[in-house]
Length: 265
Image 1 (cartoon, rainbow, N blue to C red):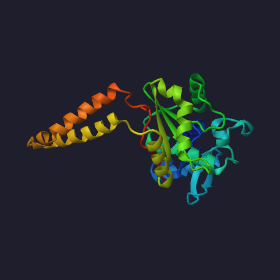
Image 2: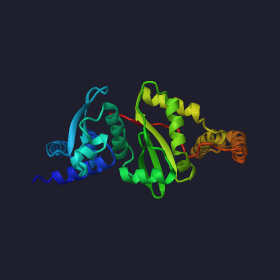
Image 3: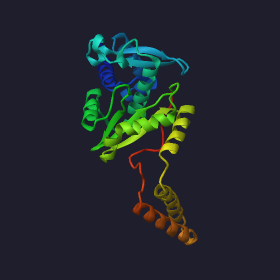
């Protein structure tokens, strides 16, 4: 038996539990092998029935590797749609976004399996019927919810923002989670960014903090001390603005990451 079979078997099993699809590049990163060796392992996984090589329509027919029911130790008849040969392109796209976050963008987090996410959703009453679940990463005791978003006909991005926040509201308000929207770079990410800005505008306190942080960095970099004198009035005004905003409502969405997590192929 090839020594590459066990690493690719473990990778396929985890990807199946996370409903994650991988590209060749993600497999290379995940296995920490030289590219040629990692690709050999990927094709070995396909030959062993652990992955299914598929071309993704709408993305230049990019080759992706979809974990199978066998990788998850499930009978095909009871496997989730994401693991089936009949999985539609939209399902593969969401799974590819999940795989890109797990194995490319935030590999530092510990990730909840499909069953663990279901348990978390039940605990906080998050509706699941008709909705794609988030990929949930754990950093200590804090959850990061990565909601995969794809372009859907008749569903504007603003509606996606509204429904996603509403579904996860109790979990987010518990103070133990951050919500991230993630989609493919380009037009989809730009539309999503605009929708977040429209539905969850940044608070006055947050805007002031960003400017104050930039000014503080300028002051720290200026050895003459002149920049501290030049910006003293503006920095005092920003500090007062932050204090006034915090005494009011503050940020209504403190648990929302307002920067879209962009995925590239």
